[in-house]
Length: 387
Image 1 (cartoon, rainbow, N blue to C red):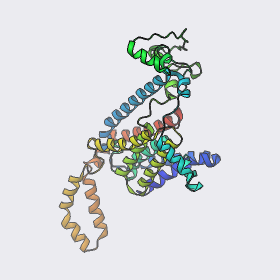
Image 2 (image 1 turned 180 degrees about the vertical axis):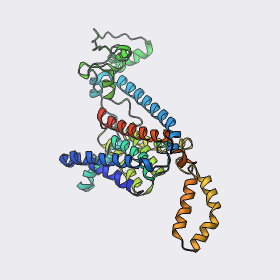
Image 3 (image 1 turned 90 degrees about the vertical axis):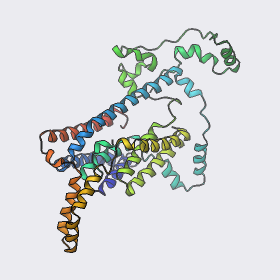
Image 4 (image 1 turned 135 degrees about the vertical axis):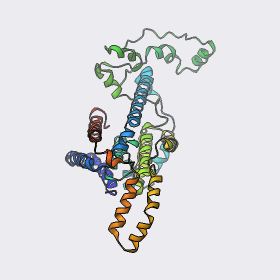
């Protein structure tokens, strides 16, 4: 079963890419693939022996998810606010910074064969793919593909500036003499006329966010709908959050699974990075920094959650205990007994989960975990932009 994880991962990416090649086949195959993956995970629940390990990991996992959601909320607030203060007109009219990395990629278009250029331009993988691959890696613990516990792994804005920017920034932004005088006098002296008013919906207790997010009437009355579509200009890009997620996913696969599929995921990470630069979604420095920050972050936090060898000492002790039996079975060419002894070694590192897994609580926990995970994944893909 172990080799099947890589096949499932690459199948998911390939089927999803059909949306660009053959939308009709994509509509047929994607629901079928999701259904097969979900049913396969559910079918393995009764045979999984490490639910007590998962239970111990549940609270730290939930805490990690809450922390991640809090950081995403903070980022959405920051990105939306920074863009909303200056308005879209300023972002559209301001020239981008020069990016040598993008120039290199554009120059390669002129010397590489056209099929290779087409592959580099193809939108093979995106952020939602890496998130789904991470989920597949965590679920693969049900099939003994990775070490238990699996839980351990795991806009639009107004066009004109905000009144703050209208008074303190806009009149001085393009006039070097005015900027110099402003710095010397430390007083805003320009008269920018009458302020343009903003749309102010009734957000109840969340109304304090209106001045920061500057919603428009077309975005609806809900503050959540504004944050869900939060986007920005050149104010949230160093380093790239998209690339950080991609790198963390690749690091998780490399550590927990390894093999050829992990190498393919790193290739997809690099492909995604060059496309982000090529399409000018990010500057090259954003992607480069995200790659080494992701690697360092994964390495630095490894001591918090050792994925492998948590029961190594118990397995080694059991192996020493049955060493003589193992040698005798090997001399007698008794393969069945060798397998039974090796299974004993494996079970010795599971801290008695086999006995505890028979309790009612250890049956409720896996059902709730699998159901919650599947529902959250479906909601993420339904309520957000592809997850």
